[in-house]
Length: 258
Ligand SMILES: CC(C)(COP(=O)(O)OP(=O)(O)OC[C@H]1O[C@@H](n2cnc3c(N)ncnc32)[C@H](O)[C@@H]1OP(=O)(O)O)[C@@H](O)C(=O)NCCC(=O)NCCS
Image: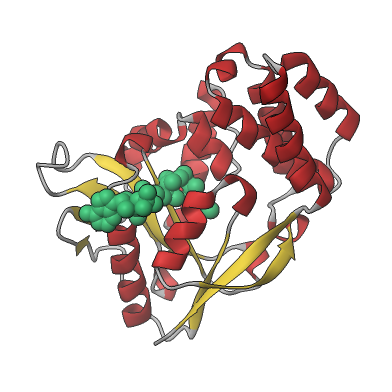
């Protein structure tokens, strides 16, 4: 199917990204929790701008092969203003997936918990299998920090196959270094103290990266100890950090053509 083929579901419209959607993509990446889930350093306006450009290009780069990652826009006025972009969903290629196309999704946080990603994901999967003769697709998920994504993948019918070392599919070293800096900065950032979940995710991400050979564990531990506002949170941070440091792998899930 081509990038011109929009998909409509009961509540949503999925369509290819356009150049004038750049601001909407920047908006999606402006949530630090969403950014950390997808391993993107979008911590400054400049980085967010570059990350939005990179994502739109990446999401649109597989149309010739019959798939892509579409913008998820509102159709049902009960959900919000029709046409407003609230996320992304679809299928892309990825260097770490050994050639197997990967399903990708992300939603604005105020749209979580409404079944929107499931609705978009099912439509994207149907479109993918109708538009290609690919035998399967996969998902690789930062399980320890993204339980919602694992649940969603399973709801969409994907099943865990094995674990892959994080380093095998994480993009280039420069991005890994930037992402580690970003994770540590999140822990270090006073605003993060208001959001324990975000701090814990950042600690898990830091563990994944350092366990994969990027950066120094003692520096990260010092930051955790210095910045944790109390011992209860410090325990959570240290446990998240140690969990991924000692097991820097992610599950590989697959869905085969029915
Ligand atoms: C991953 C992500 C898209 C999942 O979003 P989500 O809102 O949990 O998933 P869904 O839209 O399918 O919603 C499912 C939830 O909505 C509830 N729900 C409410 N109304 C519903 C409806 N009409 N239909 C179906 N489910 C409904 C379900 O019960 C479920 O909640 P539960 O898990 O508490 O039981 C979201 O967490 C996200 O954007 N994360 C950041 C980006 C990211 O991590 N991407 C993936 C990287 S690997």
